[in-house]
Length: 267
Image 1 (tube, rainbow, N blue to C red):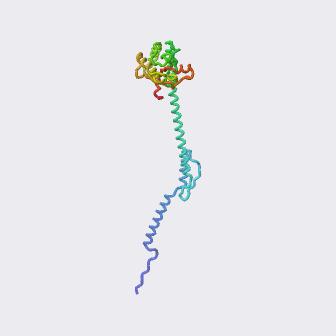
Image 2: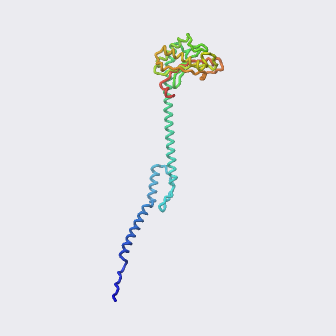
Image 3: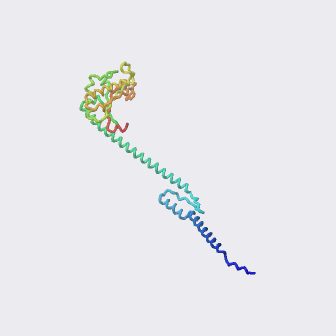
């Protein structure tokens, strides 16, 4: 009988190839695992770098183990959010303060212009000798020439008294240098109800008085007619107590307002 040949010693050839393949797969998966694991030392260095740069992250402790971050990252993000909100609010407050400063400076310039105009008008009023008939006042929008209504009109009427024309003529000369300014004539009354078939109430009476003066100024001056306007305020803007005869007399008045160059910005 023929003898069976002895099998070669050692592992079969296929097993060596299989083992090499397993080793390669193991190395591959180990490499993937190592790439997915957080390097604690590098991460802590990165956090320290942010702390030094922004000086806002707290020096809180952090722990990293088995590739898992268990530090107070959320808390630090909240600190960042709070910091930038506070910074934005601070910048907004600063901008508001700067805007308020600009507005105040603008008002001061407007007031200075009105003051200069009032001084010029007071000098002219003194030259014409009507300082006892015309009062001058001003604010940041306009200069005001105030005249007692009794000087210009009879009680309950809106026709200019003949004795008042010389005064209005001088007022026309006063306003002519202000060709580019808006000039408003306002009529005011006391609160005593009017009984007239022509003027149904004090509003109407005050308007017609203002209109009478405005129309006359348009006729005697070179001021652009569109720059002159009339308005009636009736009894609603008193400057004195309507319960006394003296107060009611003060409230019956005609005002000429000469607006400065800043006035349109306050409307």
